[in-house]
Image 1 (cartoon, one colour):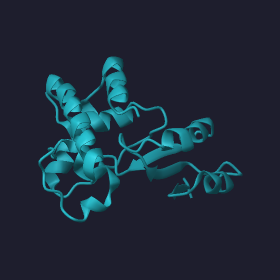
Image 2 (spheres, helix red, strand yellow):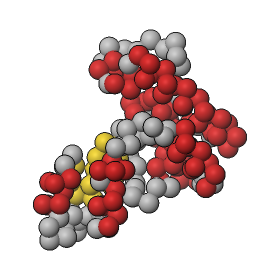
Image 3 (cartoon, one colour):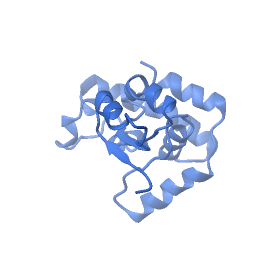
Image 4 (cartoon, one colour):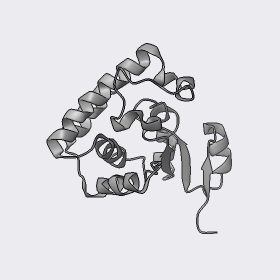
Length: 161
């Protein structure tokens, strides 16, 4: 066994699993909308040098810029809080502010979002979902993108609180 990874562990479960220092990676729910892992997990994972890999990094497509305030949301998505009511409208407005950064860089919103994750100390890798090969190819463009410290800070501010 070269590496041990866990997924969906509570912090207490992670600490128990890592009591001998063998956990290498934690996969958990984290994205610009749901940043609770920054307080819950990141201090511990950084201290113990455990890599964090977020799932749902594009928040079921919401962080790709494909939705507008007028988009009819399919019933399955409506179960997710960030697709409901005022939260949805607020999230779309935030994504539009990310689009300004993306446009200035000649990039897609998803690339900017993925690059932001990769700029975070706690995050080792990002595995975005894709339904089509074109999406995979577009996601790979993130590897060629570097955000400035000002852009990273601006994205932090957009999604703060």
